[in-house]
Image 1 (cartoon, rainbow, N blue to C red):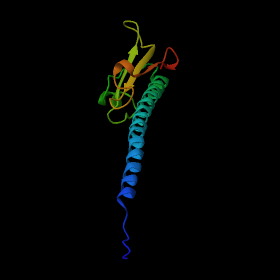
Image 2: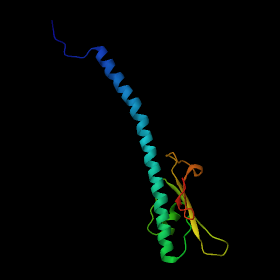
Image 3: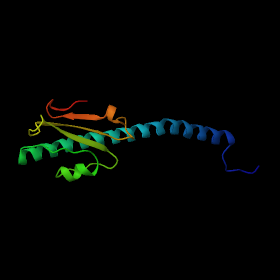
Image 4: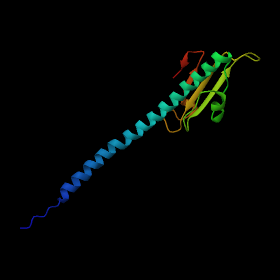
Length: 131
């Protein structure tokens, strides 16, 4: 009898089935890790923008308004937002007065905080991060 050094069909099918099961578990987990990473980026951006606002206030005794995108980087010295993160900062003041506090929000369409309705919210009057 000749010794055929290959695998049987059953062995190959079992191997393919095991790889399929592992892939079915790994792919959704990878997507979840990615979403959480994107959320962490959005959260980091709102905290960094708030720090930049407070640093600006310490130097000039007023807050800057920032309405998303490139304007935020131009208006807030020392702040650089992450790519594809939507950010908006708003100063709040009575008409004709110096802004007393600021609010802001960040979200990324690829994360679980995917729109302004579920964004991370910051309110300096209320003590920081609200959700």
